[in-house]
Image (cartoon, rainbow, N blue to C red; front, side, top):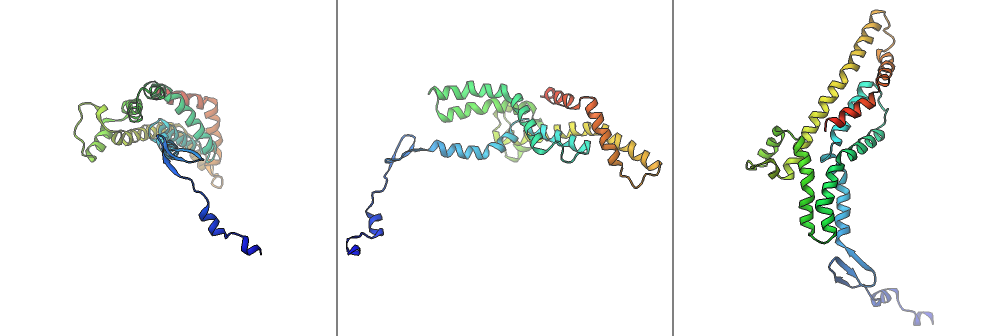
Length: 239
């Protein structure tokens, strides 16, 4: 009796109404289910590339290189931790990039919100302030390497170079600057290691590694001279 009056599940699913995809100005509109704009797709894609863009187009490369050199020079393998160094580098990067972000907001974001310019125009205007910032610190030698590799004609001015040339050249320049600061920062701590090693060897303390004695001395010296303040001030003045 029940089998004669019941409807098969497959037939019920086939007879059920399905949502219809309708074209919309912002994307695809699903009937009865709202709108799925394409801007969400682009936003999610941008979020996946955001960490790489943050490292490639900001001073964070130089800051992290110097911080890691400092940790190696002090002999503390995990103090400060990577999370602390990353947070400090991120906050200092935000401080240094505030003028650039303000220019991007004034020239691209605000006109786009007001409907005065389109998306592509806003993107072109928004790229200009970061490009000027990177060109200010990118070496001409590094720019020439990538320009010649891309077979680009010699531009009338550096601002005519594409971002595909400016970004890697800027990263190379920042790596060189970070290694230079790290090498200078390493020298006084290396001197302490040499002095401690020579003293412990001369008095016959061969069973005790010199690093056990030199590490507290280096930390004490760094704290006494207020090293974090000096390092932060020097890094900020280098930009």
